[in-house]
Image 1: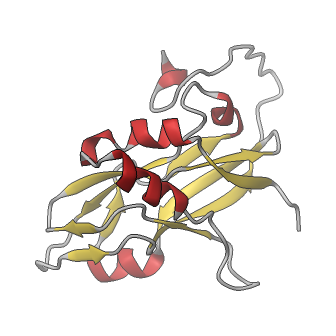
Image 2: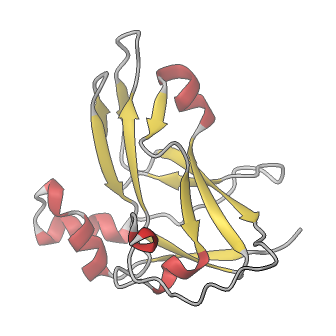
Length: 168
């Protein structure tokens, strides 16, 4: 088994910037930051590292939320972290990531935002089910995967950002 990466917290300043949509006071933000849990596998056979929410979430059908996780990941070159909703939440509620699968590239770690991982979720329930998660609940999972490149790949550009920064 290859040990491909390591999770870390982003700085408090980056976490605070990511939480701006939640209108929380400095004391509450610091308390939430201190409670961030780095992703871990639940069992020795688990492929995914559970990512936990930093806020309480109540999503009515059709609603969307962007969750700042407070984490980043450093990983081996030629590896990526794929982020998916937890299987049970997808099965029970049709909880989906807005981009279907989140791809965290190894060079994202070095971005201006410290590689802060955000997850945008939508409750796509067609049965009227409400997703109700408490701060600290596992809601997504990250799986490390190797990747390859073409023989004639000659890219030399470097990243500084996320969400579409490499397509500019």
